[in-house]
Image (cartoon, rainbow, N blue to C red; front, side, top):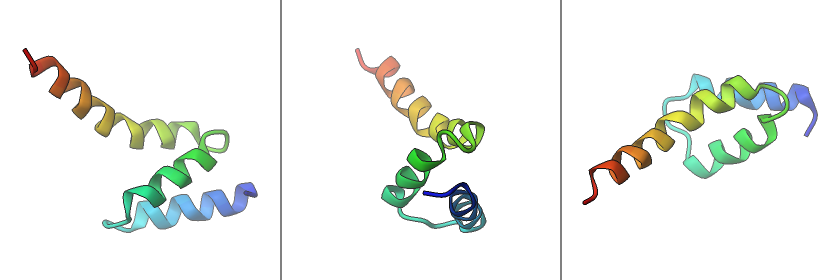
Length: 58
């Protein structure tokens, strides 16, 4: 996907409070080389939630 389209997709996702998660993951995949900081910012919360849940498991 061209960089301009990736940046447009990032803007759309960032401007909307509800976007289906599978669409966000597809955009994150395309954005990994275009805007890795954006990808990290959006991947961190779900990853931290998983890690926190694992820490509380006996």
